[in-house]
Structure formats: structure tokens, C-alpha cells
Length: 419
Ligand SMILES: Nc1nc2c(c(=O)[nH]1)N[C@H]1C(S)=C(S)[C@@H](COP(=O)(O)O)O[C@H]1N2
Ligand SMILES: [Mo]
Image: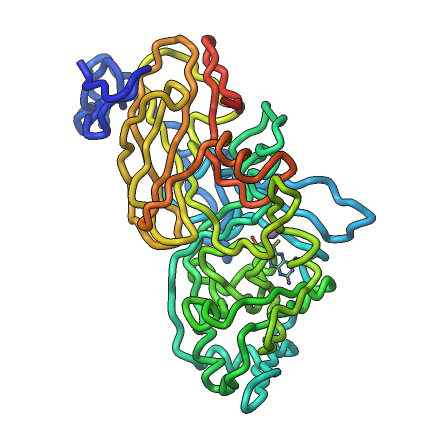
């Protein structure tokens, strides 16, 4: 018997499960080479002739074409605007492949030739500076694994509805990559920060001229000018040839196609820091800014639109992250939050990065509600949806990091539910 650690089938994460091949036992190499034991082994067609040779740039298997971002149809009144979402339910580990990183563009992707691109540093500095792409490549770089999440991710779930979505369609505006670039502090030091400079206004070279203001303390802490994403020059969709990267903070502030950094006394009040990404409160006031993303987790399997074909053991798995530190603990419930079991952490627990968790669960064929709850290194616990609605009121949308519930019906269908 398995050690049950919470009600409704959650099994100790320490339990090692032999869940792979059923019935035939281990396959010895002699059997692979064509012997007995009731195993018939035929050489498949793909082993009979050599395949195509090496290529210049890889693509996924044609049998894995379900790996794709989803995006809304083009809107002629909003050229290039919109977003695409990462297929979270099909990914494992914590690194999002560059071709599947979510995208959010306000005026499409500019076709920037790095040779003509410039980064200007001006405002309250001793010496204004202009950098080319080549100039930046000469600096000492740092590499860090960080998640990026749009403040609008999961927003619709605060308002209700959307019960038939997938992990991708409901929560796919989060991704994680190894970002490499030059610390912003290096560049600012070189320009010389004047004492009344308290904010850094960053502007992109896209047709939206999207801009955001970053407090100087953050700018000097861990913000970087990112040039590489998972080892290759950042993708055009992620800001080629350079983007600002503000670890742990709402995605909007990581200005892509970065072309200007201006040091200022106060926030610049750009469109995107006033008309959007603002958290409303029940008394109809609102926070001016909500920068760090909350302590959050999401079960990616089983998840929306999947169906459990049989009773028995499943590995529940998902991702957890926090904009304020690393993930210390993830708990999982199979009874809608009444009892909880600790999940196993599958990989590294890096600060401001996705962390993968898993826990075995025995589905007995009755309905269940699966939830996960993250706690970060500062002790921030992922809140319930109910608590979030009390705190924020019923018109709030951005920065939703509440506990997410997947309902499993008694025929094994998985849908988003509200508890
Ligand atoms: N210049 C510029 N920077 C931008 C945007 C944009 O449209 N233009 N979108 C912002 C938003 S809202 C988000 S969530 C992130 C998305 O980054 P990604 O497309 O690399 O995932 O970039 C931010 N930086
Ligand atoms: Mo965003």
C-alpha cells in the first residue's frame, strides 16, 4: 500500500513508484535483440533507412507539433498588438524554449538591424552616453535564470468565467529563461548618477515607443540589459537586440527593443504605467504601482481539457514562482483545499525563477478538486481566490496569483473550477 498523506488520494512524495512498463518486467538487451519472453520486436520503418542530415537551425519533431503558442486573431484596429501564450501543459522542467516563450506586444515586433540600433543614456547623469550593440557586447556579462510574467496573466479568473480553458489559455503568459546581459548598474555608473536621480525611464524602439519607469534602487540592484536568451541572441519577439530585464517584476516593465534610459526625479507617467497594470481596490482607490509578482503556483498536469482515461496513480506536476525570492515549499490538495500534502521539488529552487514540483496521486474515479499552494523564501503564501477578492474587490484584474483549482469529474474530465 502507498502511504496516503492527505485525503482524496495524495501519496507521500517520497514514495517511489514503478509506474512505467506494465506486465512484462524489465527488458533485457537479449530480448531487444530479438529473443523470446513473449515480446515481439520488429524493426520499425524509421530504423530501416538513414534520415535527413544535420540542419542549420532546429525545429521540433513533426510528431510534436502540438507544441505551439496560441494567439488571438490579428485585430486591424490594434496592428501588431496582442499576445501569444506558452503551452505550459506540454512543457517539463523550468526553462521555456525560446520559440515557445510567451509574447506581449503593443505595436508588433520591430525589424531592428543591430548595426543601426542605439541605446542612449541621458537625463540626470554626469555624462550622457550612446551605446551601439557592439559596444555592449564588450562588457562583462552576467547570466541568470528568471521567470517573466505579464501582470494580466490569469486575470480573467478573478472575474469568473472561462471554465473550459487550458493551462495555456488561462495562465500561459508566464515563461522562464536564462537571460544573459550587462548589469544596468555598470552602465549607469559609467554615465555617473546625479544625486537627485531617483527613477530610470526606459523606452523601447517599437512603434508603440513603450516606456516604463523603474525606481533607482531596483535599477541598481538586479536589473540587466539582456542580450541573450537561453544562450542565443534574444528573439525578435523578446526584444532583439536588447531589452531591459527587471527580475521578478510585472512583465510590462521589462522594456523590449530598449533604446533609451533617462534618469529622472520621478516616474515619467508613461501610458502603460497609468492606463494599464493598475490594481484597483474595493473602495475604488488603487495602488499606484504593483511591481513584484506574487507567490504563485499552477498545476500543469492534470489540467484543463485533459481527461483521465483510467483510475490509478498519476503524477501531479506544475510550476511555482515568486517575484520576491525563491520557492521554499509547494503543497498540493486533491479535496479543494481541505487537506494538503507537500510536493517534491523536482529541480533547482532559484530566486525569481520557475520551480518544478510533483506529487503522486491515486485517482479512485470520483470527483476531485486539485490545487497547489506556493510559499516563497520570504514566507509569502499563495492566497485563496476568496481572500484575493476580499482584498481587491470585484473589478480587479491584474496581478492575480491566487490558488488555482482544477476540477476532475467522475468521468475524469478536467476543467477550471471556482471553490
Ligand atoms: N517596447 C516594448 N516593451 C515591452 C512590451 C511592448 O509592447 N513594447 N510589452 C511589455 C509587456 S506588457 C510584457 S508582459 C513583456 C512581455 O515580454 P515577452 O514578449 O518577451 O514575453 O514585455 C513588455 N515590454
Ligand atoms: Mo504584460
